[in-house]
Length: 175
Image (cartoon, rainbow, N blue to C red):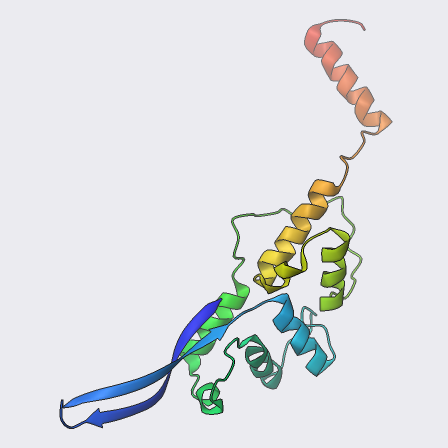
């Protein structure tokens, strides 16, 4: 979860001769739940390849808000610094796991929607509570579970012959 403090009001206290700043803490969560809310509004895949418009990006930030009763003027006070912080949070992997792209897996070009991610979670027995995890971390978990559940690739006859030839050479035998 990302928490940012948004200045809502600035005034000058004449008694103390100091500026007084009032702020509101906004809690944001980049999760499957937030992406699902966004998809229900925009009727397109959140993880699609198409760039988001400014309105769609602002809409997603609104979908990420976790505060129950946030005054609407707080959202209007977001500045570039806040937006940069949100962008960094959304793009963060949030995990120490780094998976290489599997050259043996075929890329189907399938459009990834939140329903597809929920399907993966259900089929891989990942608890639904994980829908509140950072979305990038959840997708990494799905990939890890899928990789660990995939049986090892069997050796081809050609690979077996090459391995046997190598062993015969290594041990100096004829078989």
